[in-house]
Image (tube, rainbow, N blue to C red; front, side):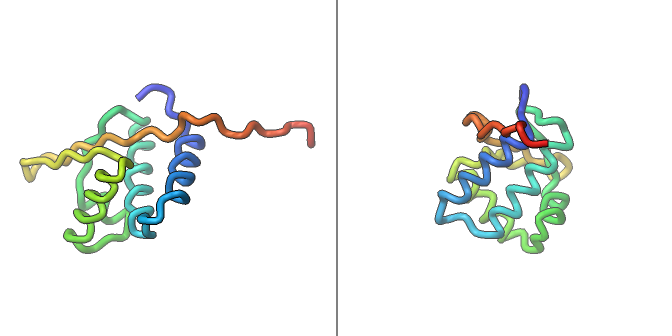
Amino acid sequence: MSDVNYISQLNGAFRKFADDDKISSSHRSLYLAFFELWNQKHFPKNIILNSKQVMALAKIRSRTTYHKLIWDLTNWGYLKYHPSTSPQMGSLVEMSRFDTLPDQKMDRTYP
């Protein structure tokens, strides 16, 4: 994905979390695990992820909880999730962009 700004994207997601009464700390944790892996891969349009790796980063132990949270995030527009039909291949995830709003510019007049 071209020109994703790490700070703007993360701040945009935080703004969206703040306005969303449905979001729990577990949803945030899972989203941030996806975000971390997306960043490590330099923000491609789609990422292929292993659920065990994501669950470990998000500190989620239950596969049932993981799948409930991921479907919530999908239904609420935070990402698009395409589960894999093969146990050897990871699932495809497309992260939604939240960095489109202009952030406040820093006042650089102070040393």
